[in-house]
Length: 245
Length: 221
Image (cartoon, rainbow over all chains, first blue to last red; front, side, top):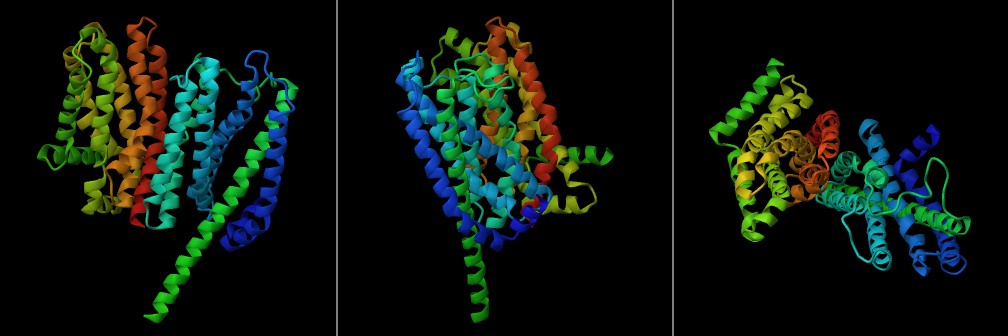
């Protein structure tokens, strides 16, 4: 395991790695999302209470999982960046933020569309909804902070510091439905005593979750590639500039 | 410990001399509270129901406003760098600055709040829970805001950006603080919220000195 970390710690090696595997992750992502959509929209039963609106869940729930998982991975990578000064960890953390923000926005919007026919309202200030909204604001603050640095190296490290401060929100989101007994239903898949969801609904949910996971991987790889190319470009520019003048 | 006290005294001395805008932040606290009756009508029933939240929002904004300059003036004139080179650990300096900020911003807010609660129409028998939540909540506000304030020094510009970063982080404190008052008034008992609010303080006390000093060092790199 440690060998893999060390192998990928070299930015140019990581660039080659990501160029090689980017298309694979893209392919896997499309396969899973296509299968998941087919199962979810065509080949799964409507809910006995919610009817066809339950199909929104196949986008909403995986997006919400990803919103939290990406922040968790950003937190872990920020610890790597700040404690061991891993040269790629802060770049990975920085490049994850826009993807996480998008997934959070998708979760909020689809949840709102689902809430109108089911709860009768677009939005309630329930504990789960509020904490996910705060997560979105934290993501946006992170992106703004990182972009406002002229030096990318400093920007990425500043982002890592901010990520750790915002990490307290994660357990609040996860357990908000258990701690506060408000409108959003409690967890039914990721539970200690096993899932309470029917297998026909579980299959498309898992497929979509895997598709979204590989969406994250492929977009993370392309984002990191762009970031590394930008840094290299800047370095080359400075080198040429100092040679000529 | 002696050094820690002297650092705090230095910051308080700066505030008394007027080179920090702590007094302005307190004045802003008064003004922000007055906004609520002026904007949402002077009906006493409405005001009574929003009073706790209004005072909390005003406290949060006042703290936000003064946090922007928590490290900035010392960072810009180089005195913070000199302090860090003097052998005192940067974490201690950060803690002392946070404590001095709380003494000059949080504590006056806690002391003023019962009087302002009267003006804004909060039932006076609930003054104790207002003071208690503010007493526990304002140090958390200071500590949570310290790291973004240090990061804004590293960027070199503050203002809207700092507010944008700090506000979402402060929201849980606001929710729990004003939630405790609302729950107590409605008869549910506010201590559930207060326990959660109290949990934030030691956690931030543990993490913030390290992260804020990392952010300050980033500014010096």
